[in-house]
Length: 182
Ligand code: AP5
Ligand code: MG
Image 1 (cartoon, rainbow, N blue to C red):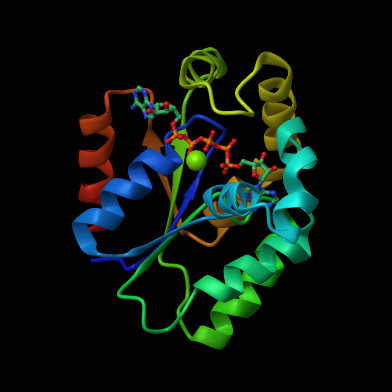
Image 2: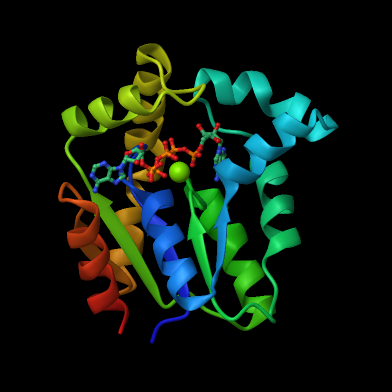
């Protein structure tokens, strides 16, 4: 059973939803940089105030801020971990590689959740998170395509990538992930 996982995919692909299932089933840490940043905003912390406007616009938060959050949460004693929404660009990949070398816990599998744009937009608009409005979704998708999508090729070359057709019902997607994790 793989223990060190990454969920990659566009906004609305189901990264958070599926990571929650895997984390619950296996008692793995679910590390969502988006969730952790939203928590900081809720708490009205300095960090939260720094990132609020950027997140509401759908732009990426500064790499160093995100790296600090990741370092704070990834520990050797986690039974396993799932990265959700991190890394998102090649510089974050570099930083993550260093963190994982220090932990001596290399990534074992990268699930790429693929969903067509029109389905993503529909899902996000009906969810209604603060950054789920037409303008912000457009920015998030654009940034995803420009800066995050190249990671697919990167992990493919390392033979870590598993393709998931994620435009299916929740259970079908979960079963596919479970099968490929084993
Ligand atoms: P983040 O929170 O990571 O948002 P995102 O990448 O835009 O992705 P979402 O969380 O919207 O989608 P998801 O793939 O998790 O899908 P979900 O399961 O929720 O990031 C937010 C912001 O934080 C960024 O814009 C940036 O500002 C900042 N940030 C975060 N990480 C960063 C980083 N590393 N570097 C810099 N900045 C960073 O599902 C979506 C909806 O679809 C839900 O309603 C769900 O119920 C539904 N759904 C899921 N699966 C299915 C299915 N199979 N069928 C039908 N509906 C489904
Ligand atoms: Mg999410």
